[in-house]
Each structure stands twice: as structure tokens, then as C-alpha cells.
Image (cartoon, rainbow, N blue to C red; front, side, top):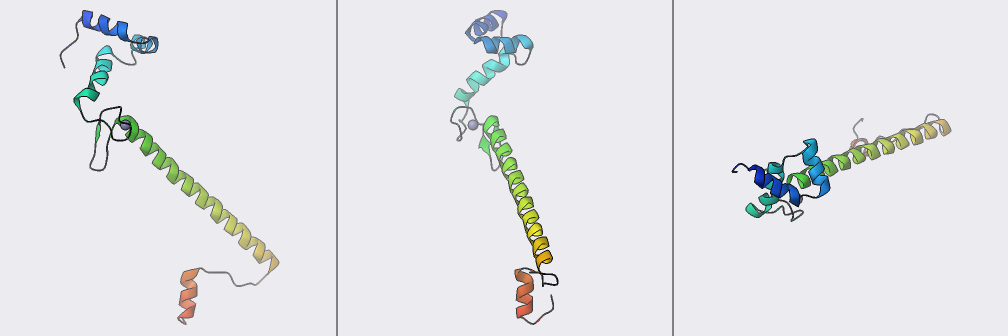
Length: 126
Ligand SMILES: [Zn+2]
């Protein structure tokens, strides 16, 4: 991209809303970066998820903007974490139930699961 003159930057500065001017003043973003982001969508394919930002993550399985890609990656990892947490709770509940059954029925045979049941049905020792 061609470099911006001071007059170009001033003209763009005046277009910016106050929070964007403050971000530029803090050094969080440059006017050149904002201009690049403002014009990128018109130069390239739009993200099929949000239809707002240009595709910027070019991966064999992903062709979204960086914001959508990051949001979906976060959602996928949070979903997996929730599954693991739920599985932990189910296992803890099963162990509590087994301890209670052991206390109520000392010497009872433990349920060993479908694999052991199938082995017993075939006459094998688990
Ligand atoms: Zn997007």
C-alpha cells in the first residue's frame, strides 16, 4: 500500500469516531492499519460466517475472518472443556453410587461393563 501523507492521515483522523481516535492516540492501532482494515473487505472475499469482514484465515478447513476463526476456536475448546467437566461429574457420581451400593450390599459383584458381560456370555473369564 502507498504511504499516507500527513494530510491523508489528518483527513482520515477526522472521519474516526472518538474511541478510534483514542486508540490511535494510545498507539493501539495506526491510521494506516485502520485504512487497511476499512478497505480490505472491498478487495477480497467476505467471510462466509459473518459476511462483514474479509477472509483472512486461509486454512484447508477454514476460510473465515480472523475474528470468526478465533471465536469459533474458543467456542470449540470451551465445548470440549465442558464435555470433560461433565464426564468428570458423571464418573464421580458413578463412584459415589458404587460406594453406597458397596456399603449397603457388602460382597456384591461389581458391574464390570458390557465388555466383561459379553466375555462372560462367551464363557471367558473377565
Ligand atoms: Zn467472519
